[in-house]
Image (cartoon, rainbow, N blue to C red; front, top):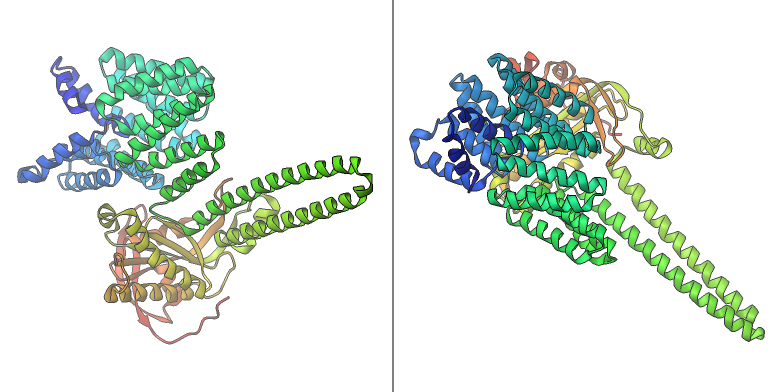
Length: 619
């Protein structure tokens, strides 16, 4: 029985259950209700019946049941557009909640939170307490995935407090499940077990098996972390069996990796590998991108544990490649290769050293029997050992140099030096900086129709050229976010003509994009582009303990992003701050005051040409 059929039979038992069933379908969109078969059936109705084109409930059901994040995002945005046009507050914030869920599945946590907080504005206007609480839980879920435990706890507590006041056991059960999931992640197992057991009891009482299945799976995770393997295996198997009825393959794939861990701890390597392979096959079959990456990583760990370095390396490479299949940053792949190559060389050094020691011991035995040759054999042994140490040191130094070179490709030289010296980087304020954002038009539509390889090739074609332009003008590349490219002038070293440098770079980027689209000589998709620039103060530095990245923050960055969003195809849109700095050098078209999200109206200008040539010294 699929999830939709289950709910139809559920609500016929009692009129009082109609709202509960409907809201369960809605509230579990954060991870407990996707069903691709149902989504495909609903899409067939949507496209075959023209009268259904503006059916808000149908659009919501499609978005909820879609297992593909990009497709779920597409239909949630259509829902929002129609709901806003119809002034339907309820369906508007439901659209934003589903948009947040889709972005969360894509791993874009910042945009997911932005969608959810926008939805909160509509919920507060509708003044519905249970919906406010549900949004609190959804926000807590995103913070939990982003490993921000303090914020996750805060929003879970807010949601649970409202649900307990409303005395609605269904909504409380869902909230307890999500809060318990966060406490598992932070290893607060006693609280996690209490919350999850309470949620399971609620779902069992109201007859909601998929909710109970998720609770059983999480209890299995809790017992596994607590070292109770027998109970862990029992609960995980029960969860998998229940979820198979609902074809919830993402959750099944996750729980299969936990089964692999359990059997590895028991010493049953064959079963452990079989469970991990099953998890990977299931994720590949249903194109579960995050789980494909996670299953590859699990297999890499298992094969490393059994001593099969070749297979471990293969699955680790697949994990790295698939994890970055959209951004596909070359530097990350090099870093993975560098780490593996260095580990292989270290293993080989250990083998060589062991062989050398064995030969040395043999020489000692022979020397004890043949006293005449003792001095010669000892001298030869020492010479070869010293030669081996010298070669080993050369290998280590070469790998160290490669690592430092790669670090300089990721961070500015001054920042990299500070990081190596102190283990962290002190954030700095720069008063005069210009920030550029670019974005490709209709990138999401192309991403749905192209293979990952074709998409990555097309994006790399543009970003490789952008990198050369950035280096040419003495700018600093900050990062790429999907199809968005971000760079700045004036960091990490202040320059007086930061705005002019950035305008020159932006014009070259735009010319390159236009020329590439006209010629179309190289294979791959060609895009149109929007560009936006703002100038002002920023804070710059490196955050976190892993995967270091140089980044900048502040209102200047946010406004630069808004300039790009408010730009038009093939145009460079600049703020008034930037216009004041370059107005004597460039021709600009005043666009008037344009409404900017969370900023009100702001003056904007298109850069249309250059008033006079100016040479810029590049540092």
